[in-house]
Length: 293
Image (tube, rainbow, N blue to C red):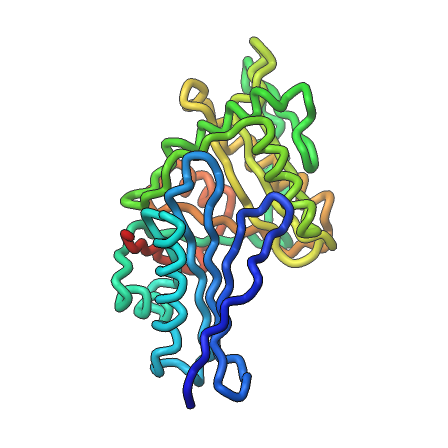
């Protein structure tokens, strides 16, 4: 039966970047697959696009995925993008499809989960209570407080040297408007953003941060977002300190939360060591693949 590829209305959710959508269907209108293309709009990443493609298992190997991907690639090229990225679990049909479409492997991501019901709350509390001379912990929910906004935005450069292997990721430029917009986007999705930060007591600036996003009902699994310590403050155990406090607070504030999820680049050994020490267990690996346009 012939396949029809239909472009749908562009989706915009508040501060989120635009997404282009295509629906694959039989001539009778029965849907069999879809593709999403996110056109990154953040300063420093306007060369990048991200594709997410799904085909019903019963409809695979009939060229549907190839047609959907062709539409996404054409749109990314038309928008002047340099690189198109997509990811799938290592060795999965999706990963094999991306390889066949010419996407090369650029990064391996390790996924881990901490089951909160078995997390050692007493040990986490001890870690969080340990003094770190010259530093103190602080935290907030949602949008960063005004008095910390400037140095929090500046602290985002802690992520600039995060291992990304061969990914054409660019360097994200953050300012106060951008960090506030990112927090607003989480709230618009109905989720809760919790941030723990380290303050340099010499000047009151943010030296590092870790972010956790929790479902709005406080159930299911939370997801770690960015964690970083500025280069000039590394070597003092601040990453482990912040993350232990974030876990401790999540356990106490959200008793219905099942676990915390983290994804870490395979080459990011410092963060992997922190997660291992705090009890995170591996779940799977995904491969980030890139098509140079």
